[in-house]
Image (cartoon, rainbow, N blue to C red; front, side):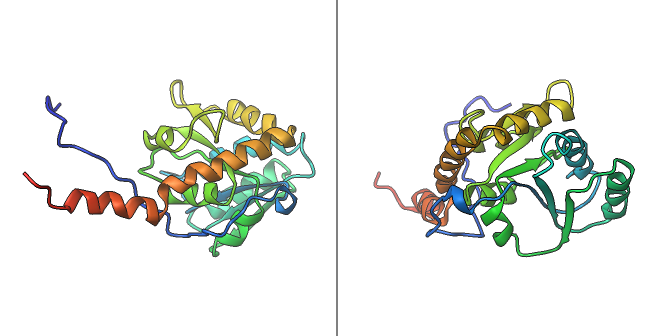
Length: 209
């Protein structure tokens, strides 16, 4: 509600899992879809990731979904997999995510709300293209839809089928996926410490009157 926003600015959080030497190599990527985060039903809504995967697995039996993280929803998520006969879902538990970022091709994020999800930026820095539910404004700062990731608009609520179609479009077109991944890595560089710290320094630097 401010009329004068001239003195306002935003500075994003920097990536905490840094890999400045990373060079994207399609040969090192596997047919893996990734979720990284707490397995809980209120914010992260991992059940939506599984709903999306249930539409993808029959079409892409050579792909795997890996869930990196732990939490109170784990049992119900495992029951969902059993009920829907999902064979290619791996519950990895709480782990260092870096090795998973290195080999994954896609990241699914379907949270009900977020601030700036660092797992998403970290994944992008490893060439993992994000497909994200646009329930939070930072999604649109992080992703230019169709170029360095995909955003499912929040208007109308979460739609697993639409998210699955976004993922399928990339899973069946390796050339498009690899081209997007390279742009994803480039976008992530905006969130390195080398890029963020100077912004803070500029804010506190005394200016001559």
